[in-house]
Amino acid sequence: MMMLAGMFIGFQSPINAALSKRVGIFESALVSFTIGMSVLLLLVLLSGKGNLREIIHAPLWEWTGGLLGAMYVTAIIVAVPRIGVSTAMIAAIAGQLLIGMIIDHFGWFGLPVREIDWRRIIAVLMMMAAVWMIFGGERPEKKQIKGEANHAPHVYNDAQGE
Image 1 (cartoon, rainbow, N blue to C red):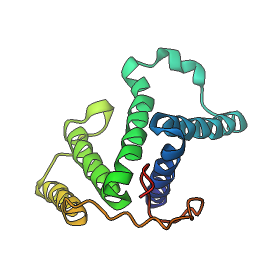
Image 2 (image 1 turned 30 degrees about the vertical axis):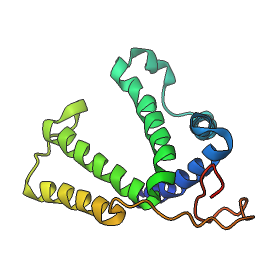
Image 3 (image 1 turned 90 degrees about the horizontal axis):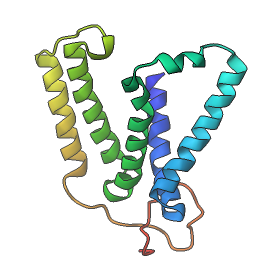
Image 4 (image 1 turned 120 degrees about the vertical axis):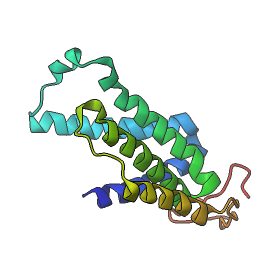
């Protein structure tokens, strides 16, 4: 299931980045979240499960998930045209792995403790090496085919039309 979710993010990132060139960075993020919220609202109404009334009793830090999600989506919208989808994804995953290991190690947010060991440290180092290997510090060539701006699966072009 998480592999499929990762694939969704892989598609979402260049789609949102392309939309941002048409409507703006924050506007693209807003469209993404509005559509997502609409789908979730429908699912909440149809499922009848859960208890949204309890939200008023949630501590303030439990409300930050949406803020962090908005920051992530906006960062991806900015990063994808500059460094490419694969580099943006591997860098995001490396960051998630690193903070996930810290959260697990200390058992933050009421999660069970999973101590950092040498295997986990090597995994993070390998992810960071993957970021370097995929990106290599070079900017990708712009290979947009002129006149095919409405064709979805093509290489990204910048605002100057290069």
